[in-house]
Length: 183
Image (cartoon, rainbow, N blue to C red; front, side, top):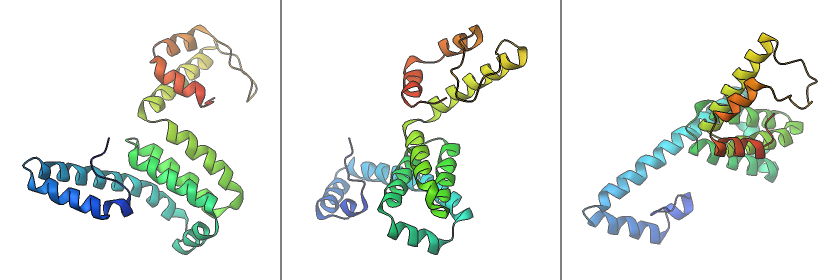
């Protein structure tokens, strides 16, 4: 629950300004305002990771034109910015930026960008770490010959090494990954 609204328009609204002024008069009020400001600044810095990735590939004019001409892209951009601002995983924020850069550069990539940003919005550090551990277990099983080759989208055989790796992961993390269709 937020004491102060986070949206730019809401932050500058009269009720929000009055609330900040009243809190500043209370002994603990200044602390709450400082706390809010600190978290807001951190979220902005995280969102800049995404913007910096986009800026590496996309001209500012092109970005502005594409955002103005496509509400769909604008919606994906906004959701990705929010996801980046909330994420503690730098790699996720940068990958969100790369997916968006592709969407800005190529109209055909917008739908793929939406899928990628939607998936990334639903996972964070614990899920990414679990995927890395499961991938490592699969790689080791393949190298040892325990895991046979398979077609790209074929179902993975359940072998002891992968079952054991999955059992070491938290059930909630596995549940989120299962609902996201991560392969």
